[in-house]
Image (cartoon, rainbow, N blue to C red; front, top):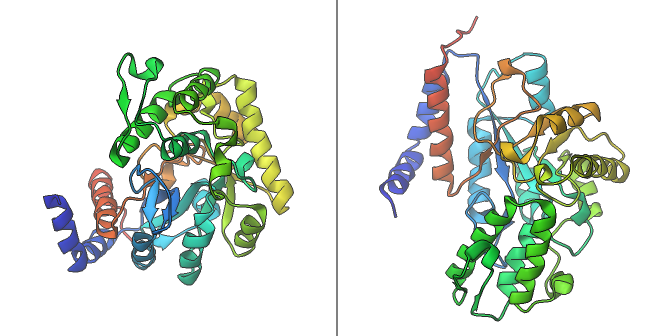
Length: 351
């Protein structure tokens, strides 16, 4: 347990963070908007290899985090965020939007009841090729392969050279899962698929039937429709979750277009918000950003960490921040980012 962890715990439960946030924002009318990013929400029954709370967020911390955020920030939907930025209205209170990537079933079974309880709106960016199926994204298939293999070690020279990787323990599997996934993100789409087949072979698994060994991980359309009717915004996250910059341009455009159209066909409403897979700037391009504008997207979200300033009106280059846990670490992280923002930007006094 680190000193920072203990310090943030004490500052959070003494309500010092609340006091400091009010002190910082008093007398200002120009505030940024924070867009928080979640993926999976986990309970004691969840099967996974830990990648940190931004990817695997425990429900016990989510249940504490949402009321804290609601009590200290103005929670906006992505429609409202875009409206404020496009109209140069600005954010008159410290503002925050909540987003989920991929379309996991636990967003419905675990996160949605909490959001509904506190009247908090959120946006779900869906990987449409997985919705209503037993399939998983390619990164989740890698995770599943390490969970299901009976091998104690493996070799994959394209990534690890001559080194034999040990996967006897869960910790070793977690490390291997992260290393393989991160290495494949840097490869062209065709090469990534080839190496995944090699991985399944060395782990002695049938890659084609892998998902049949476990329960459904992703949402179905009935669940998406129910949340959409209840005010949860639905956005696009591509069709099959590739790294869009690592595939031919036309294929990348089809990934974006097909995802948008499939959601609109299933929900009967316009889809205005897109978040590109993996989220680093090098995973997208200006040409694809222009294409998103052309086909009707009003916002494009990345995973470039930072706050969003209404004055910049950059709705096609939105920044997000991963939602860490526990809640006192999240509260401290957000407050520190706001302190840096306010110190760097002169105050515009209330009229």
